[in-house]
Figure (cartoon, rainbow, N blue to C red):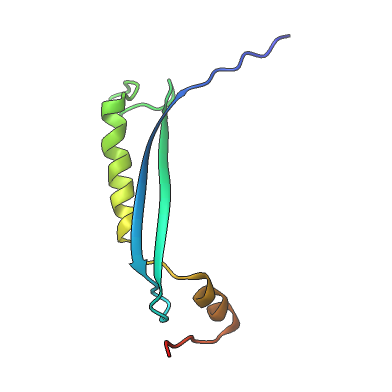
Length: 90
C-alpha cells in the first residue's frame, strides 16, 4: 500500500516586539514570532467554507497584536523567580 503525502499551502505573518522585562530588572527584550495557518479542507470558517488567504490574514494579524501586548520576562528573572530571589536593577 502506498502512502500519499499532501502538502498544504502555509500562510504566515511574522511579528516583532521590543519590550522591557516585566520581572523587575528593566532589560529590553527583542522578540520575533511567526504565526501560521494552512489552507486545507479542515481549516473552515464558521459557515463551513474552507478559509482563503483573505480569511486567514486578519486572524493572524489579530493573534500577532494580542501577542505584542503581553508582557515578557527575561531569562535571568525567570531563573531568579524559580529560586525565590528578586533581581533589582543596580
